[in-house]
Image (tube, rainbow, N blue to C red; front, side, top):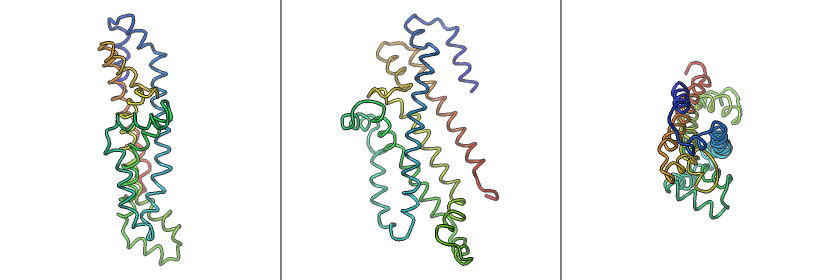
Amino acid sequence: MVLIVALFIWMSVAPLTTVERTTLAPDALWGMTLQHLSLTAVAAIIVLIIAVPLGILLTRGPLRKFTGAVLAIANIGQAAPAVGLVVLLAFWLGFGYWAAVVALVAYAILPVLRNTMVGLEGVDQRLVEAGRGMGMSASSVLLKVELPLAVPVMLSGIRTALVLLVGTATLATFINGGGLGLLIITGVNLSLMNVLVVGSLLVALLALVIDWLGRVVEHVARPKGL
């Protein structure tokens, strides 16, 4: 946060050209930042809706045999070059905001899915058997024993996905999806180094802030005694 404040103080006193001052106007920066956060938040919510339930299902007995195939499909998003994935999906879905969201979801789903599965599979089976021995149903064991113990690992995957989303959301500008990537592209195309530096620093600092917030949530949400 201190670095963000220092960046804006520097922008207010730096000898910027007219084009740079127009590009880096507070209203324009705020609008691009909101677009960037919107891309990140919407993609993160969709990832959670898909990856967490799917990760739970893949740790249940009958569906374990599909684990390899599902992980292979989920890995496509990270195995493919991010720029190529964004552009290909844009040609398929149309250029704009939602094509960027779909690309971000494909790119960030693997850490959440994998950590959900690892967290649940890492629960001590003696505790699971103890819950069943007390007469708890399978859903009660999942909700009251397995998920609370898996929370730290699951939150770690979610934090990783959020940081990936913040960085990758800069590519949305290639398909008219908005975001802070516009500053980086403008800086490169027009040789405006100050604009390029400001855009890059804002994305990096935003990723650091979200990573820190994720760590805070991990600490707060961690079950007592772990």
